[in-house]
Amino acid sequence: MTPGTAPLDARWLVRLRWAAIAAQVGSIAGTRYLLHAPFPMGPLVGIVGALVVVNVVLALRLRRAKSLPDGLIAANLLLDVAGLTSLLIFTGGAMNPFTTLYLLQVAIAGIMVPRRWSLAVTVGAVAAFGGLLLARPEAIHIWHSAGMFQLHVRGMWLAFALTAGALWYFVDRVSGSLRRRESELAAARLDRERAIRQSALGTVAAGAAHELNTPIGTVAILAAELSEMLAQHPEAQAQADLIREEVRRCRAILGRMRRPSVAGESERETVDLAAWVEEVVGRWSSDGRGCAVELALGARGVSRTIDAEAMRQAVVSLLDNARQAMIAAGRADAIAVSLTDDDGAVSLAVTDRGVGIAPADLAHVGEPFFSTREPGQGMGLGVYLAQGTAALHGGTLTHRSGPGGTVATLTLPPSVIPDGP
Image 1 (cartoon, rainbow, N blue to C red):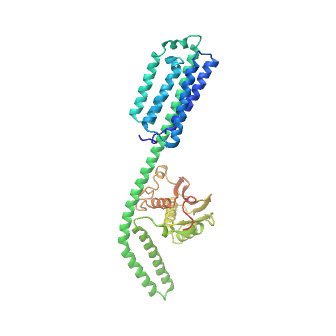
Image 2 (image 1 turned 135 degrees about the horizontal axis):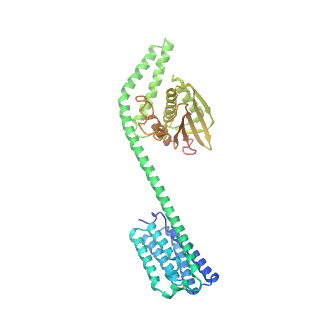
Image 3 (image 1 turned 30 degrees about the vertical axis):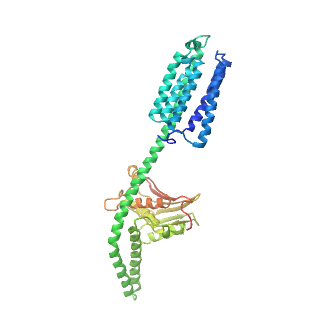
């Protein structure tokens, strides 16, 4: 374990020692002046004063270095053991109920330093406790004289409560740190798996695009010639021109697929989101897909710099999924599309009124090749690619579903992507 990697850093030594010094001062003053316990004040004040000086020196060092070597941390913990032992010698020795505080030093050593150093602190605490049995044996009888036994019992309870509370606090911090670290590792593993899958999909897509490029180019040439041949037939020429437009779109998509990486900044453009969404949805509706759309476009005047083609494919994928859900449910309702702006975070929500997605399936939505459609009706890549597009724009894609339908929400956070080049 290197300095600074422990769940609790060296600054906790300073805080712990200040807390211990405050508790020691309070205990000494209370037992000496309120309960009139026969404790020698001179040595006790001297021990506490020495601990104060040591802690000030340690705090000043940590301001410069921010961390300590493991050996120095262990040495400070042994110093605390020695300080506690010195105080106990003059306040009842092994019969003082606050001997349970040795366990706190042992626990902190187990948390902050490697095994060999924590073992040294443990051996030191055990040896110190044993030494109390030999040092000033007459002090053992203090707590059994002059009516002090009841105070001793209450002190045992207080010492146990303080030790238990301190142990709970530090162990809780450590377990919380470990849970956060495990969560971060799980997220990192998931990101790595997604990157591997996306890389594999990119390789397959690049190969497919390479194979399709030649026949698509042939179709483009023939469509252009057909359009010229049908110059005297406007309706037929319009259909030929539509073929040319669709071929152009196919070639643009193939061009993206052939690149090994995502679109660069040069392919992004700044768009008014409300107008852009209206255009994308309008084109989708006019393609003869047989499904009405209810638009509720807020965020007027809000612009973003986006990869318009990639984002269009993501939105079309969400619309296609909503349409399929409506067909599967036998519903003729319109798909609801809304655009909202919440303190700069722009959200596009696509809502269907289908039967919804089962909770067990909802947990897997967005995984590659996972689909809730019937076999042969989908590859299970639409949502996965849409999630990737959202992530590339600094956003997220979430799904919320119930018996009344599903809401897919694509959100772009504020100030993640600049509004201009």
